[in-house]
Image 1 (cartoon, rainbow, N blue to C red):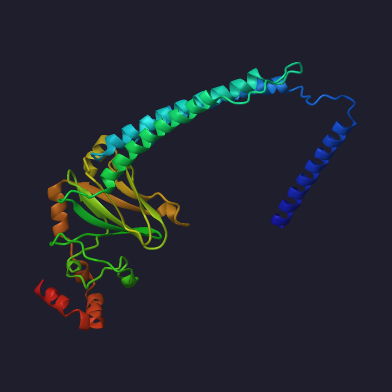
Image 2 (image 1 turned 90 degrees about the horizontal axis):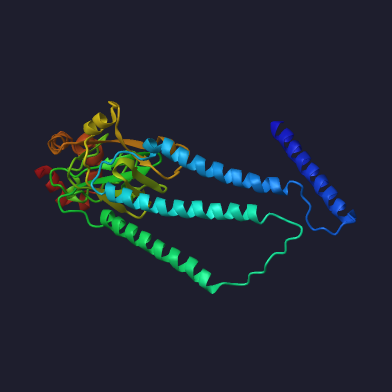
Length: 346
């Protein structure tokens, strides 16, 4: 019934609008004057346009200053200052252009408001002006894009040899992480092996997978490169680490990666922000479904010795899931003789 009433109301609005338009057309047809434009509010509209412009610019800068601390978060990685500089240079250029173009647009609306005795000038072309407003933006954009691409290639390219490697898999609506064990080599995966228990599809036919472990929370060391090898199981997600100024999409069927060097532990950030409950988070920055808002994962940054101690305390995935691994060996006995020997030896 609510939908029916809403539909009736909408139809009434449409009917009234059509009646109004019909009366306007009829009035214009029966007018004895030949004037093309008659509007007593013309000057008021021009003035209101200028007032709107002033209010708009004031509101933008007032809100940006007022909320500065909320969107300009503390920096916690080595490459973050470069990203901040690129961001603010881009913001300064684009905001300057925005303000200038809005002022010109509303000024023209006020200055050239309709006047009965004014005749418009027909301005055909100006090659010099067109070259200026084409070449200058092209140069500025080339510099900004080239600068951004250079920084992008740094954090998405090959990571340092001593990086801590962590696999991060996004799925609706959570993150799963996998670490290499004592061999410091992350094992292979196979999407065909993904199920309720083996949620990232660990492939145990690769002996490097035998000591891999999957913790409930993600730990990384301060001052050491961390390489995130990123995948998605279902739809596109996005690994977003705002305090590290790092973000990378997680795309099904297309592994991506991102590396950075943390500069502040979780405890140091808590002291800096005066918040004992602060935690770094991995946030999904793509609208990936109904529960997208809840797709968060705590990330703990600690001193390297603390990280090593935590890592040593973790049990491998197969140790926590012996029945699953036993079934895997049974179902693949003919192909896994070498793997079985490696397992017994380890």
